[in-house]
Amino acid sequence: MNATMETLDQVTLYYRQGSSDKVYQAAIAPAGDGFVVTFAYGRRGSTLTTGTKTLSPVTHNTARSIYDRLVREKKAKGYTEGPDGTPYQHAEKTISGLLPQLLNPIEADTVLELVSNDAWGAQEKFDGRRLLVRKNGAGVEGINRKGLVIGLPENLCEAIRQLGSDCVLDGESVGEVYHAFDLLELDGVDMRSRPYRERLAELRNLLAGMEQGVIRLVETACATEEKRALLDQLRRDRKEGIVFKQLSAPYTIGRPNSGGSQLKHKFFSQLSAVVTKVNAGRSVELKLLGKDGWQTCGNVTIPANQPIPPVGQVVEVRYLYAFPESGVLYQPIYLEPRADLDAVECLDSQLKFKAGAGEEEAG
Image (cartoon, rainbow, N blue to C red; front, side, top):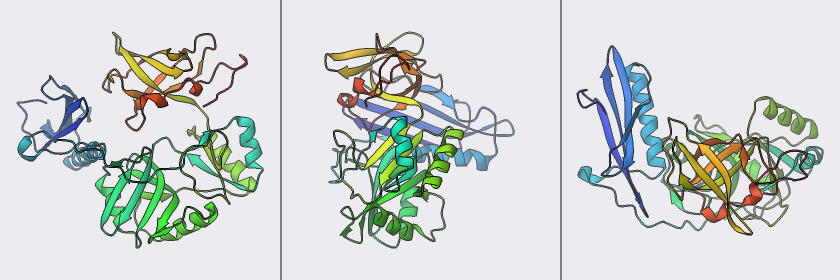
């Protein structure tokens, strides 16, 4: 933060959970003929890392929009304003009682089989965060894949409150948009035992006529030609992948040991790993858990515009392939931290080995 610059809007947010005790500051300040949005972050009581969300001055309306979005995103991750500037004491984790159905991966040959199978529908696989949303009267709460209650952006809360019924939705949160693809409860009725095609129809009716862009119904292709066109479009647009759902199946929480009624195929190799060492030059060492314990899968460089994750943090990495001899990733790209995953979920079965090496992706 520039101490000589008069700030127009500013906020200090706090987050404390376990060993984490972090602070995040954001501000709008005049610069030249316009305004900039600055930020600072780090462990409370330490020297903060500073930066800007605007490389050059912008109008006040633009700065305000950037600032508001930044604050919403941080609050959605659990940050909050402490009363009178005192640090926020994070409450104990709240168990929601709800858990999502998780998907098993499939290979390209199975994708082609399901495209031609009318018993399965197809949807885009979004590159976001799995999120259940529960509405009970005016109360709205988000639930992560672990079943823990988490904060939601205010714009999503307002959109959910517009729904005419109490409900539990399942979907993916990407930026400020919630992509809804399932309906688990409606006005006190448990929908999980009903076929997916019926749950999808009820979800479509629930969202019909809503004049907002925050909640979007996920497009579902059912006929073979529709699924083939969707698959081709997702590949052309370089999307993350495709999901297949058995239209007659109920909603079953958890992940089956193999197969299942909901399956996914990623167009890019991607995995979750644990940071085990912070190296010089903005890189970190990564490890995965295998039958022989924790094994390294190489290092990844952290972009200059992102904070270096601490040891023990689970992170998401995209890569080209892994070398079968060592399990080390080739051309890894750091994506983001994963607060919704535990270290024990970072298994070496996620590895996809170099083509022609006689190995396949198992996880």
